[in-house]
Length: 106
Length: 92
Image (cartoon, rainbow over all chains, first blue to last red):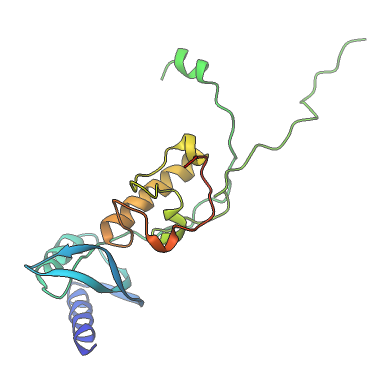
């Protein structure tokens, strides 16, 4: 458990160095991985899942993926955009006439 | 007397797909596993799930993301969620 804390601290410090603002850090718990992952000459079966909310310029992404890839304790890393508030209108399933689509132009 | 032109007054509201008001996230693996085959783990197409264009694309993207990031297994369905109620139009 202190090792995970050390890993987290390292990553957050590296992020702050590159100029990222960390908003939230969520712990999704320790679970068995869905499939065995082999990373850095070791086969992993269980892992801790963490979610870091951050605001950063997009140039950080490649640098951070490299940095996290070199870290032995990090099994898999990924950057995902924030899901923005989508417009609420969903028009519903309008039946599409396939013949018109076929004969019409793009 | 001429017939008055007006919109069809007996028009029904357009059908909604089952995920209409639900926010699809790559983190809730249970919801995403319901659209995956329990035998092969492949994602069901639109003719099986019965979702509208937007939601089907969102679900597919979320499933692929979850599989890559290590939230959801690829070649099979998570055995915890095997007993979930059937949503898709498929016969086993």
